[in-house]
Length: 367
Image 1 (cartoon, helix red, strand yellow):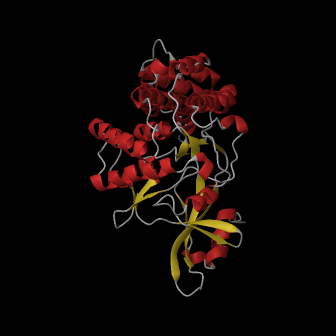
Image 2 (cartoon, helix red, strand yellow):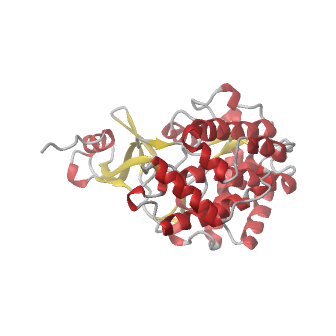
Image 3 (cartoon, one colour):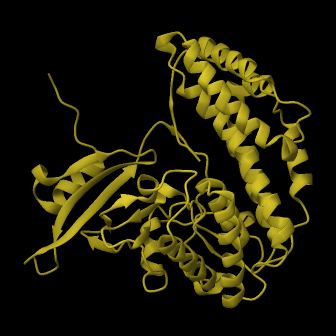
């Protein structure tokens, strides 16, 4: 019996540390196959902590636009400017990231729970440092097209390109397989016209660096209670208020803490770069509405692919998915212009029908 050859990421990890017995992985993760291993310092005299080597998983749907050519290049450029980010080290032409030891913020305080004051202060400090990284001071190779780089301050153009990416690369790109399901849950192509009208007219704000994916699993709390920020792959340059809206949407703070963080964010970014919070009272809600709408299209696909055809689209499984998707649809009804939202059992029926017709589960990336 022949064994499958090791993946590229594992092969690089073994080559880097020289001992396959100390390579840990692959670690659990959606985007990448990741291996962690100890590495000596440059003199070879002592261990310099653990490092990670990874490669994108194959056969996955990607729902997010990538703007920088390399996460490691970006991290190297941000060294000394953004605190609490992984170190980057070159090894034989390969750029490795230091593995941050600790627990995710989600493991410390799960979604919906408040974040301890000391950690929240560090999150506010991260937003301060991000606001200080302006487009003209960030020299890193970018992969995004010119049309995805609106002029500094063009917040309407920035958001419109995100809507277009969602329409073209999530909705239209998967329409052959999911058109009927989209229609059954009430979100056809006309929803994008409604969304564009709903979120138009944003106030201009000066652009800065955005992490664009600041949720509890992308924060690591080390043993000394220092907060580290990982997974910069979705970072972009754009509207600073978008980063706050994305953060609030993904973190699910209690309302009182979300309000307090917002007030501190406004004070912090205005201190760094006046005008960065201009119009936030109106625009924050609109940007949150965009995030709710974005979740609909990704979650429809994700819910369908998560059903197990081997269990005959088990009714309990589809009912649970139907309830979750119903909540997502209800949250996004206004920005998408939905006149009504199908009941959870109707959503469950639509998902079960899709599973019976297509009959093969896939693996999909979350937003």
